[in-house]
Length: 145
Image (cartoon, rainbow, N blue to C red; front, side, top):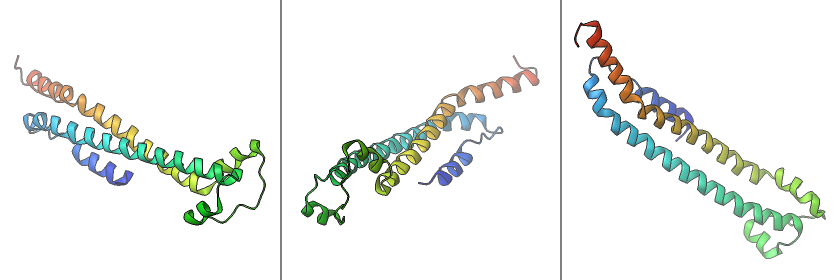
C-alpha cells in the first residue's frame, strides 16, 4: 500500500457524520482496530526490510573487504571487485552502495507510514471524546441537561 492510498483511506474514515453520532460512536472501535492492524502489518514489513538490509550489508562487507568467494559472487550475480579497499574505507563503500541505499530507502518509507499510522491510531483512540463533546454541545445548545 502506498502512502497516497493510505492517506485517501484515512481521509474517508476520519470523517464523523454529525447527523449520526451514535453510529459513529459504534464505528470507532472498528476503525481503531482496522488502523491498529495496518500499523502492526507495516511494522512487520519494516522489520523484514531491516533484516534484509543487515544480511545484504554483511554480504557487501565481505564483497568489499575481499572475503567473498568467486562462487558466492557468481551466485549473487556480482562482478568481482577489482579494487583493494583499506579496512577504514569499507564503510564509505557500504554507505554509497546502491543496493543498500535502495533498501534503506524502503525502510525509511516504511517508517514514515508506521509513524503516520501510529498517529491515526491515537486519533481514533480520542475519537470517542470528540463524539461525546459533540453530543454534549448539542444538549447544551438545545437546553437539555
